[in-house]
Amino acid sequence: MEKRIILVVICTSFITTFMGSALTLSIPSIENQFNISASAVSWVVTVYMLTCAALAIPFGLLADRSDRKKILSIGIFVFFASSICILLAGSYVILLFIRFGQGVGAAMIFSTIIAVLIDSCEEKERGKIIGYQTSSNYLGLSLGPVLGGFCNYYLGWKSVFYIAAAVSLAAFILAVSTFGKNLFKADNKSSTGVKSFHNKKINFKLFKNTAYLCSNIAALINYGSIYAISYLVSIYLQVVMDYSSKGAGLILVASPVLITLLSPVAGRLSDKYSPDRLSVLGMAICLSSLLALAFTLENKSFAIIIIILSLSGIGCAFFSTPNTASVMKNAEEDQYGLANSVLSTMRSAGHGLSMGIISLILGHYIGDLPFAKAPESQLIISIKMCFIVFSVITFVGIFMAGKRKS
Image 1: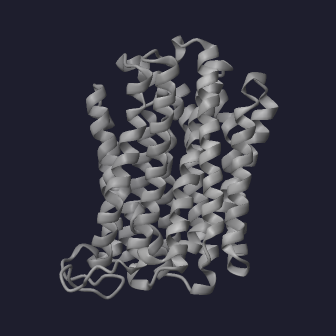
Image 2: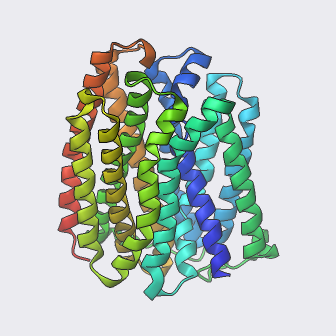
Image 3: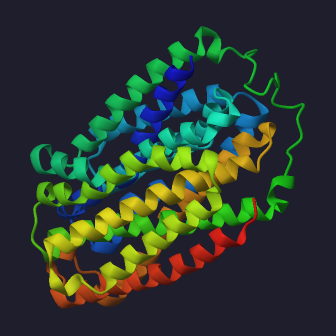
C-alpha cells in the first residue's frame, strides 16, 4: 500500500508543479497566437499560482475535518478535467478559465498530498519519504520548461495540457484503486478518524510556533526566487541568446537533474542531522546562483548558464526537503492537512509573488512591448534587476531559515 501511495504522490506532485512552469517556454507562442502583450501573457502563469495560493488553506482545513484521501482524489480529477478542456481554448479568456480550473484541482492536491504521505509512513523514515515527494515536486517545477519547450517546438503549446491530462488521469485511476472502492461514499472515514465534517474544531495553535512560521516564510522566499530563475532564464535564452524552445529546454535540464538526484539524499540527511542547518546551506547556495546570474548576463555564455543552473539545483535540493521536514515536524497529526496546505500556499504564493515582481520590473523597462520587439539592452537590464531584487529577498530568507529553533 505504501509504495502505491508514494507512486500517487510522485505523479501528482510532478504534474501539478509541471503545469506551473511548463508554459514558460511557450510564452512567446501564446503571445503571438492571441496577439497580447508581455504583461498580459504573464497572467497565463500567474492565475494558476494565485488560485493555488488562495484555495490551498481552505481545502487543507476541509481535508483535516473530513477525508484527506477523498479531497486528494477529487483534486486529481478536477485537474484532469480542466486540462482536457484545452480543446475548447479558442481565446485568451477561455485559456485563463482553464488555468483557473487547473489551479483549483492543484490546490486540493497540494493541501493534502504530504499529509496523506506522512500518514502512510513511519516517523523515522519521514525525511526520506518527503525527499521523494520533494524530488518529484521540484522535478516537475524545473523540468516543466524543458519538456514544455520540446512540446511547444514539435507539437505546439497546447500539447503541454495533453501531457497533464494523461498523467493526471493515470494518477486518478491509481488513487481510486489504492484508496479503495468506498472512497467517495458519504460515510467514508477520514485518515484522522473523523467521520463528519462538523464535530471537529479548527486548531490554530500551530501558528504560534516560531520555528513553523520561519520555515514557511523561508519556503515562500525560496520558491519565489527559484521560480524567477526558471522563468527569466528561459526568456533570456530564447529572446537574447536566440535559442529555440527546444534548445533552451535542453539547457534548463541541468537544474532538475541535480534536484532529482539530491533531494532524496538531503531527505536522508535531514533524518540524521539538523534540517535547519541543511536548509540554510541550501538557501545560501541559491543566493549565490542568483547573484551570479545578476552579474554575468552580458557575457551570453552557455557554459556559465549551465554552471549557475546546476548551482541552483543543488541549492533547491538541500533547502526544500529539510525545510519541509522541519515544517511537518512542528505539526501534530490532526494538523497535517493544515500544515501541508500552508506550505503549499507558500509555494504558490511564492510563485505568484515572483511573477508579480517580474511583471512590475519588466513593465517598467519594456512597457507593453512583446519580448521579441523589446530592445535587447533594456531586456537584459530588466532581467538583471529582477535577479538583484530576488538576491536581496533570498538573503532575508537565509536569516529566516537560520532564526528558527525546531
